[in-house]
Image 1 (cartoon, rainbow, N blue to C red):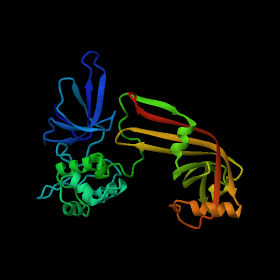
Image 2: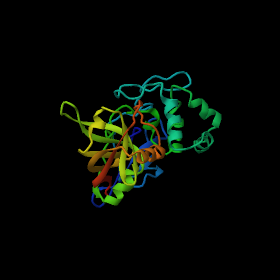
Image 3: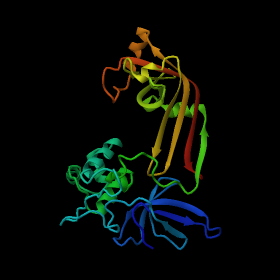
Image 4: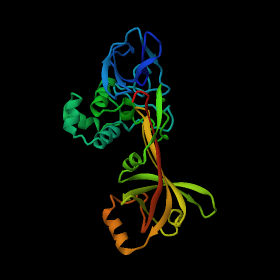
Length: 306
């Protein structure tokens, strides 16, 4: 048996031949791709060391993993440092490794010292890695991925500039509807969502906005005269979703309601004081738009066992 990083290990039931468990191979212990493997199981997210038996099969990944010695991608220098190829399309370039490690560490709220201890390396060495443009040996990358609780692909930045959802689907996905209360929880208090609008030419459009949730209403800032400020008294749709590329799971929430412009000075002042940040798009966005949902629906994709 041989495998590549990103391949799927499937354990089948000896009685029925149906898949009993599956997971992504995120760590190799031999350069020729032979067992054992570090596997992140799709049903629990747990990473374990696996010595596959006769009921195990490897399903190739549709996406090559940069830096895998089995794929022999990129080029290596005398120290064995491997640059990341760009053959997979408009993904992050070969100078992104250190930046991606640092970004993933900060996103998870981990200090340099904690991450280094988990990866069994000196903090000084990790600090140098975060300044490097090329990836170290595969074993080091695998330990970093495990320490950060992510996949090797994430550290290489593979697919960073691609639309989400291009990863492999679960073998046995479960799609279920969400109750309104769960939708409200997932909508949370702030983030980035998409609102439907009509352009001055009468064409439909979907615009991403930074939003907050205040007293059950979805609110966001816009510029006078913009398409998002022209939705007053219109019925609109507002959508928020989250996707986990590593686990091929996710959810989406759709809110329907009438949009209005907040004009009462005290209400505007309260929105300004409670805002979590400024819109990413910048500019003088002084118009507050409020959407009071009359309908909240959502769906979640999980493994069938959950």
